[in-house]
Image (cartoon, rainbow, N blue to C red):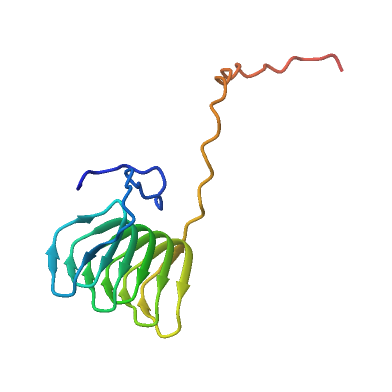
Length: 148
């Protein structure tokens, strides 16, 4: 449940083979301290002090998150103090965010309050197919004196 997955792209999030389509919900009367991980959709309405990793993340209007967020899609409606890394990031009109955003697609709705830097990250193409070994570089050619 809290296992670590390594990623090759800074914006890729491992789904871990999740079959559930029902989101996990942290309600408004709940406070969590520490790292939170979900292989599916996570809806936060409470307080989280720590980093959050999910496939899809919604930070609800009553949520207060202090920590970095990483998800394929991130929707911020509440307060977030931390950095966001996501393929698609949406800050709604009620969002209050302090931190940096790394994204492929970014939407800022009118009324959203944001303080930080934004960096666009291009989707990385698939790794090229392996090629045959390159031949070793030959020794430099010596200039030969040609008759003039």
